Length: 503
Image (cartoon, rainbow, N blue to C red; front, side, top):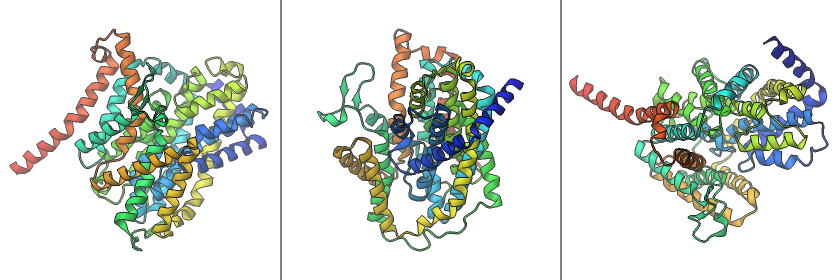
C-alpha cells in the first residue's frame, strides 16, 4: 500500500506539470463539447487526433485522451437534460428524468446534480482504480460466455419492467430494439441478415443514429405536431441550484450509482449503458417519491438523474481497470485508447506498471485532476445552460433537427442515414403517442448482438447443452434474480389488491 501512494505522489508531480495540466484542460473542454454534440462521440474524436498527436509526448497525449473520454461522459448530460437530445448513448437515461425536470422549471438542479455526481463518482471510482485494479481485473476473468449472457438477460428484464407504463410495453420496445440489432452481418458466420438488398444496411444500423432519431428527431416532431407553442409556465425557471432536499436525495443516489457503475465498467458487459439503466431502475424502486418519476407522469425525480450520471462516470473510470492491467478494452473508446498506447509502442497489461510506471501513475493522477477541472468548468455554467430553455420552442425544435442532422451525417457522410433518421423519428412520434418507452429499444440494439454472441459461444463450448446456464453458479444466480424481477412486481401488486379488499 505505501508503494501505491508513493507512486501516485510521483504521478501527481508529473500530471501537475504545466504542459500536462494544459493537455488535461483541453481534453476535458473538448470532451464536454463532444458529449453535447450527438453522433460524434469520444472514440471518433480520439481516433481523429491519433495521427496529429503521434509526435507529441505520450504522457500529455494520453492525459488529453483520458480527459476527452470522461469529459464526453458528462457533456452528454447537458443536452439530455435541456433538449432531450442525448449526445452519448449512456446519457439516454439522464434524459428520462432530467428533461422532465427541465420542462418543469428545475433544469438548474438537474444540471447541478449531474455535474457534482460526475465529480463524486469519478473521484471515488479513481480511488477504487488506484487501490483495487488488479483484484477487480482478476474477478472479471471468472466471467465466461454463460455468465455474460445471464447478466445481459438481467439487464434486458430490468430495463423493460422498470421503464414505461407497463411491462408488456417495455418488452415490446425491447423486442423492436433486438430486431434492429440483428440487421447487418452475422458476427460469427459473416452472412448478411435482414438487409432487404439495401447495401447501406450490410454494416447494420448505427446505435447513435437510432438514439438521435428516436429521442431528438422524435422529440422535435412531436413538439411540432402536438405541443404547439410552449406556454411561459412550461419552462418556468423555479431555481438554479440544488435545495437541501435535493442534496439529501442526491447523495445516496450518487453513492449507489458509483457502486453499480464501477464494477460494470471493469468487466466486458456492455459499457456504461447497462449500469446507467440498472442505476435508474434501482433509484426508481428505492425512491420515497415514486410519483415524481416521468414514467409515472411526474415532473421528474432528481435521484433519477443523480444515480445514472454517477454510474455513467464511474463506469467510464472502471473501464480503465482491464485496459491498464490486462490490455483488454471494454468499450469502443477504450479500444481507441489501446490503439493510442500502441501508437507509442506501449502495451497495456500486467507489465505496464513496471515498464512504464511513471506514465501510468501520471495518467491515474490526471483522473483526479480532470474530475476537478470538469466540476470547475461546468458548475459555473449551469445558469448559462439553463438560458437555452428561454429560446422559443419552434426555434429550439429547428436547432435540435439541425444538430441531429449534422451529427448523423458526420458519422458516415451518408444521405441514406439521414432518411433513416427521419423515418426513425416518426417511429419515435408514434411510440410517444401510444405510450411505449423508447429507452428499451436502444438497450436491445446495444446489447442484443452481444447477448447473441455470448449465447452462441456458451452453447458452442458446452456442445449445445442448454443446462450450462443453470449449472454455472454465477449465471444460475443471475438468471434466478432475473426471474425474481419478473415475478415479484405482479405478486406484490396482487397482494396489495388483496390487502385493500380485506380492509
